[in-house]
Each structure stands twice: as C-alpha cells, then as structure tokens.
Image 1 (cartoon, rainbow, N blue to C red):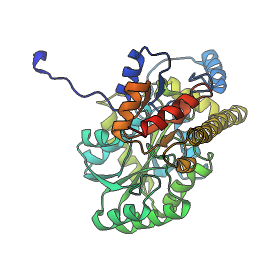
Image 2 (cartoon, helix red, strand yellow):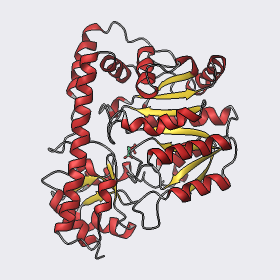
Image 3 (cartoon, rainbow, N blue to C red):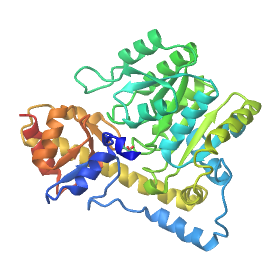
Image 4 (spheres, rainbow, N blue to C red):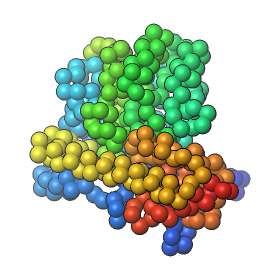
Length: 396
Ligand code: LMR
C-alpha cells in the first residue's frame, strides 16, 4: 500500500534545520528556524519559567483533562495581555491551542466550516506555513504584494491597492501584528489606521497573527497595530503565541481569540469552535498554559518576564547592528543599512535563492530560501564569518 507513496518536498524551514543537523562542518551556522539563541548559541529556559514551574510542581493536584477551550486562567491572562484588561471578555471566544499554528488552523477551520469566509488574503512574502494552513482548511488564498520591488521596505500603496480593488466583503486578511515574518518590515501606526479603515469599509475580517509580541519595540508598542484594528472592528481574530516571548517553543502554547459584537454571538461561535477542536486534538495540553497563567497572574513574576523579554529583544537589535556593521566593514557590494529598520527575529536580506543555496553548500551558513536570516542565531563568534560569507555570496 505504501510503496505507491512518493516523497514529499521537505518543509522550507524545518527541513533546513534537519539538513543543518546532518552537516558535519564545524563552522556551520543555523540561521533558519525562528528560535531565539543567546550569545552562547543556546535557547535557554527563561528563569521566570523555571520559577513558575517550581511553583506548579508544588501545587499541581491533578493531570485530568482541560476543557475543550483550555485553562480558564490562561485564557483570562491572554485576553488581558493582548486586548487590554478592560476589554469585555464576553465578546471573545477564547481557546488555548497547541501552538500558534493550531490557533491559525482552528481559526481557518472555523471560518470554513461555519461558512463565514472562503478566501484569505496573505502578504507576499509571508510565513511559508500560512498558505498550507489555510488551504488545508479548505480556504482559498490570495496574495498582495507586501514589499517594494527592491525588497527593502513595505509597499503600502501596493498592499492597499490590491485589497481595495480585489478584496470582497467577507474575505479574511491575515496580518502580522508586529515583526512581520519573514521580512521584519512593519506598518507604521498611521498605515495601520488606514488599513483598518479600508477593511472596515469593505467588510473584510482582520485575522491577526501575533507570534512575536514583545520582540519588536516592547509589549505596548507592539500592540499599536492591533489597537488601530480594535478601534474600527468589532469582529476580528487574533492568534497569539508564547513560543517566542516565553521561550515555550516545545510546550506548544498559544491562544485563539475570536472577537464578536455581542455575548450571544460569542457563545454561538464558541460552540462551533469546540466542534472544530474536539475531533482534532480534543483539548489542549495544560503545562505551557499553566506556566503562562502563573507568570502573568503574579506581579513579581510578570515584571521578571518583561525584563527577560527585554534582554532577548535588545540582544537581537544589537546583533542586527553588528551584522550591518560587519557587512559594511567587509565592503559588501550592497548597502545593507535597510536591515536596521527591520523588527523582530528576522532580517530579510534580499539574497536570491541562488545565493542562499551557495551560502549553504559552500559556507555551511543556513538561511531560509526567501533570504530570511534568523538574526538571533548570530553571536560574536560567528558574526564575522556570516558577514564575510554573505559578501562572497553577493559575487555569485
Ligand atoms: C519560523 O518562522 O521559523 C517559526 O515561526 C517557526 C516555524 O514553525 O516555522
């Protein structure tokens, strides 16, 4: 039966990490998957997470199933963090999900199965998993150009023009709240306001992927785009993940928040989302959600978390500056100062697929095919090698 199955292509991000692990060159550098690394190249467990886990170990009384929606304290803290503590939670169908991917997938399945929408707009480029997730749920994906032709900045007029001319009432529009993946190029607050206005006039649904909250400019600053949307949309969807900002990658913890205009609709939506979750993963795992709830629900732990988050954010920004400085010092045949405006873990280098391949084969420097570099994987030991290799790749 299985012999007729032909090989599928590797995942554009996770597949590269597998190839990296098999590479035995000592100088190899993994700048692929979006995982934070410290100066020593480790992805540490946050101190605050360790503290919360110690407390949980002491007080945990059961491992019984959570409800389909997940841990209530986690959901309450997530709503307060993302929407603000005074938001009417009766307007939110909230679900704890195994990672941001599941939040997006459950949202997509809900939209498709409840016949709310049949099309989702995605930026071009976007996270390579976005089209797969929405298409797997049976939604059609459309794209709008997100970058200027030289691929160094957001092409806001192209984005607006596509949505204005081709968008239809009922379409969903997937937006990256901050730290756009893969480009690191974000909208300004004024652009968010204009976009929010357009979507509201056209009856289009914002579906916000908020995977990097706190990695851009700070917790409040990174919510500015979302608050523009909230001012103009009663209905919207937010998928927020704790993989990056809590370093809880393998605990798979995220929240899906579906905002409705009233409490009755929230109940109706919730009942339908339950019908999506139950035959899929049934109910979410407890541990990651319990950690997040423990930290966000305690003033002291929360302050510690914010401080540790700031350390990660500052390190990434400093490494981005070091990379640009080293590229210039090595006489790069291209002005890379545009990288300095990018936010979050990624730098979108503008390197071609050919140059990306060359870097991997000749130098053992692994970056994603789109030219996306995980800046957090750079440190003082490899920054010079990476910069020199990129300069050489530009000659290919
Ligand atoms: C990434 O873009 O590298 C991360 O979001 C991890 C993933 O699952 O792809």
